[in-house]
Image 1 (tube, helix red, strand yellow):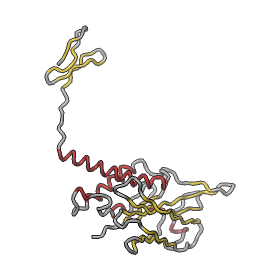
Image 2 (tube, one colour; image 1 turned 45 degrees about the horizontal axis):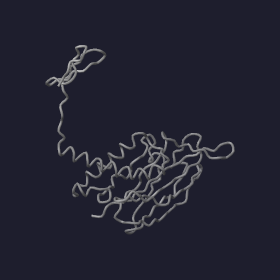
Image 3 (tube, helix red, strand yellow; image 1 turned 180 degrees about the vertical axis):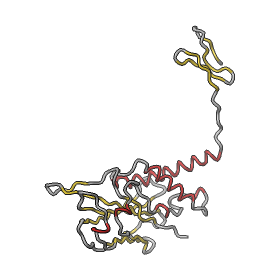
Image 4 (cartoon, one colour; image 1 turned 60 degrees about the vertical axis):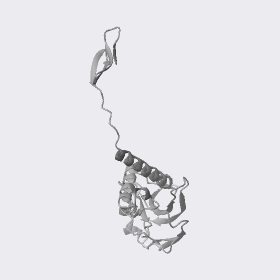
Length: 245
């Protein structure tokens, strides 16, 4: 219903139009159509909401490890790759397409900063494998820092860090295991092979290995200054435990 005010202006709804006052002028607009949400649209929105919630749980553990150093689009990229990975589990029902029940192998290789890819900074391959149902073995082979690590200018030392992460579906307390570190010098001709074995709490959970390469420059008083920043921080998921068929 529309009314005429004391100044002769029409305000309100008249048939399929709405009138209102904008800068002392009478404006008439078509009434916006009310779109009924499709059942399928609501279902998709609920599914995406679940994916976003799961992705946030994973990010909440990884982000402190990375010191919040990631590109500004990482959240959207991470949500998208999780959604794509779940979609490819065609043998599972929609209800069973969760991070714990689905094969999330596609997350392996995800970079947290697209401006500084981990694989371009460290050429030596990090090897991860389950040696039984509950033991994960990580091996960093011997390599030359002079040829296998891409050092930025003014930087002469670095540190390789690895974290094992277990995702729990039904709790707000995710599990991150001890962080393994390997100090590197720019002029090392050959490093020693490093190997760690970590016991996993539950073989049915999603298990990932996240790694980061930190670079340091040395100040005049021999103190180390971190070179990494939000725009440069080579870090990636290097392993995701595959689901057993």
